[in-house]
Every structure is written in C-alpha cells, then in structure tokens.
Amino acid sequence: MANRELAFQNQEKENRAAELIIANKELAFQNEEKENRAAELVVANKELAFQNEEKEKRAAELAIANKELAFQNEEKENRAAELNIANTELLFQNAEKENRAAELITANKELVFQNEEKENRAAELIVANRELAFQNQEKENRAAELIIANRELAFQNEEKENRAAELVIANKELAFQNLEKENLAAELVTANKELAFQNEEKEKRAAELVIANKELAFQNEEKEKRAQELIVANNELKKAEDDIRKLNDELEQKVIDRTAQLESVNKELESFSYSVSHDLRAPIRAINGYTKILKEDYEEKLDDDGIDILHSIINNSKKMGNLIDDLLAFSKLGRKQVTVSEIDMNDLVHLVTEELMNDVPDLKPVFKITPLIPANGDRSLIKQVWINLISNAIKYSKYKKEITVEIGAYKKDKFVVYYVKDFGAGFDMEYYDKLFGVFQRLHSQEEFEGTGIGLAIVQKVVDRHHGKVWAESELDKGTTFYFSLPQNNR
Image 1 (tube, rainbow, N blue to C red):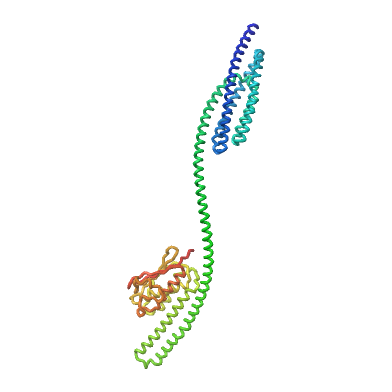
Image 2 (cartoon, rainbow, N blue to C red):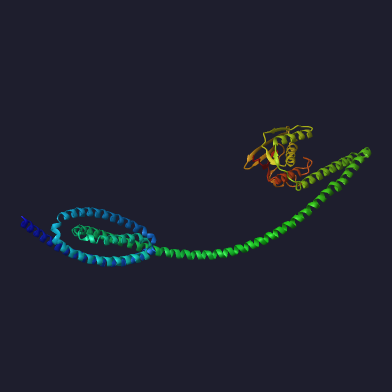
C-alpha cells in the first residue's frame, strides 16, 4: 500500500511539476505582458504629465476628472472586497496544504526556486515602484489636485510590496486575476475613449476660450476708449463745475446787489406812500372843504349849472380819495407779510356777507352758499378777496330785478377752488386780458362806480398764496369768478 501511495504521490508530484511548468510559462507570459504594460505606463505617464500641465491651466475642468477618480476609487474598493474573498479562499487552501504537508516536501524545493524568481520579480517591482514613486512625486509637484490619487497609488504600491511574499500561493489566483485584468483592460479602453472625448471637449473649450479672449481684448479696448472719453468728460465736468462756481459767486453778488436795490426801492415806495397818504390827501381835502364852503355860503347866488359844478368837484375829490386809498392798499400788498393758517371759510364768508348786507340800502341780495371747504392762507387778505368779489357781484347785478349770488367750492388736485357767481351785466370774453389790470375797466364809470383796482388786488393776493384766479362770463347773463388756495392737508 505504501508503494502504491508513493507511486500515487509521485504521479501527483509529476502532475504538480507539469502544472508548475505551465504556471511558469504563464508567469513568463504575464511578465512580458507586465513589461508591455510598463512600457504603456511610461507612455501613459508622459501623456499624464502633458495632461497635468493642461489640468494646471484648466483647473476648473478637474471636476469631471475628480468624479472619474471617485468612480475608480469605488472600483478599487470593489477589488479590495474581492481580495478579501481571495484571502479567505487562500486560508482555506492553506488549511488544505497543511493537511497535505507531506506531499509538499519535494514541491517546496521547486517552490523555493519559484520564490527566488518571484523575489527577483519583486525586486524589479520595487525598482518600478521607486520609479513610480518618483513619478508620483513629480505629479504631486505639478498637479495639486492629483495628491489624493498619488497617495492612493503609493498606498497600492506599499500593499503590493507587502503582498509580494504572498505571490507564491497566489499563482493559482493569477488566472482569476488575469481575467480581471482583461476586464480592467477593457475598462481602460473605455477610459481611454472617455479621455479622448474629454480631450476633444478640452480642445473645444480651448477654442471657446480663444474666442472669449478675443472678445475680452475687444472689450478691454472699448473700455480703454470709454475711459479716455470719461477722462475728457470729467475734465469738461470739472471745467463746468468751475464755471458754475464762478456763476454762483456772481449770482450771489447779484442777489446781494438786488436785495440792496430792493430795500432801497421799498424805502422809496414807503416814502412815496407816505407822500401820497399825506401830501396828496391834503390838497384833495382842501379842495373838498373849500367846495363845501362855496356850496354852503354861495349856493343861493349860484345858478343850477354852478351848483352842478360844485357837486361834480365834490364827487370827483371823493373818488380821488377812494382811488388813493385803493392804490395804497394795492402797494401795501407787496410788502405785507403773509401769515398762513387754517381758515374756516364758512365763518369768513358769513361775516363778509353780513357786512355787505348792511352797506346795500335798497335791493337786498340773496346769497346761495353751499358748505365751503377750509383752506390755508392769510385770513385778513383772503377776507379782502371775498369782499372784492362779492361786492362786485352785487354791484354788477344792481340793474336786475333780483340780486342772486351763488358761492361754493370744490377740490382739484392739491387745491381748493372757490367761486362767486352772479347773474348781472357780465362782460365780453374778448376783453378778458384787461380784466385784472390796474385801472382797467370793462364798463363805464357812469354805469358802474369803481376805481379799477379791486380785481388787481384779488389777483395779487391769490398769487401771493400760490393760487390762481380766473373768470368766465357772458354778456348780460352773469359772471363767475374762481380762485384757488392750497388745501388743508390734515
């Protein structure tokens, strides 16, 4: 039985020797393949160096490469899991080998020889790994983004060195690994195609960058032109500012001069008003007084024409006094300070109508007043406006059977518009431009009394309140006067 067992073991050893011969041939073939792959790696490393330079210029495009690297890391993790499975298988094989330790005594010598060969191959791998480490160092210097990949590669190299001694047992696993390498080779082909596609994309991006650079150069030229234009414009603006500053200085001086002139004119006007008030009134009072003396003392000696002449002198002197009073009132309007406050128009108009009712002895007017909106203004000046307009409405309606005056108000924009409407004599709108002029009259003195200053006073008061005054009329059908004042914003 022992001989048969020994013959069987010899037969097994011969089979193992034949298998080792085949494995050595396969290993030689694999070594040649590795040398070819090493040559390809040299070319790939050169290409990688070129790509690293391109990547340094186009750091923004590394996002896609990082994603690809992440994918490769996942693949490496998958391979590590597969190696764990292989290690488990190796442990099982070791247990089997321990059981057949007696069978491996002769095979160990052959295995020692194979281990020496593998150590030689390991030494070659160490040299290759050192070269690869040097290349990795170069890559680290040229591409900051490949640091993670180089560390992973260094880790893999260390793992390869640590597992070089394990290659003795891994020969049988090599067949499986070769199949995996073929798969990896197919994946490398795919990766190369992807890399070629990325290179094409990079070339397209480079062409786009060339166009963008040309566009940027054109824009820079345009900006330089605009900068020159802005410099010229700024110089012109500075010159204009200097001119404006000089004009402002001149204007301030002119304002000072005009203010001094205005003060002088106001003083002269005050002097003139004083002269009118005293010097002109004195002879008019004297004429009126002497005329009354003549009428009282010599009325019996004068005929009817003489008495009419005396009455004419008295009436004209009275009119002259009224005219002087109106002129003084008109001149004082320009100097009177406007005190603005809220005016209750209903109360003010009621007060004015009561005063005017007492001045009308014969035909009493009828007032139709709608509720009036309050406004802002100087109460005393606005009162004069109402007196002038309402008294005009009564005066020019005295030949009618009934005197009716309508008074109302409405809002327009930021103003309150007031109106006074009568149904009296009216006027022709053709002569509207004379309506608010001083001493301008549209009716004769004999028909309607007046000095021709009342409406001028109205316009001046409303202007000083930043409002407007206007009228609408139809001959023998009546007139409506309008004036606007700023409304109360509360």
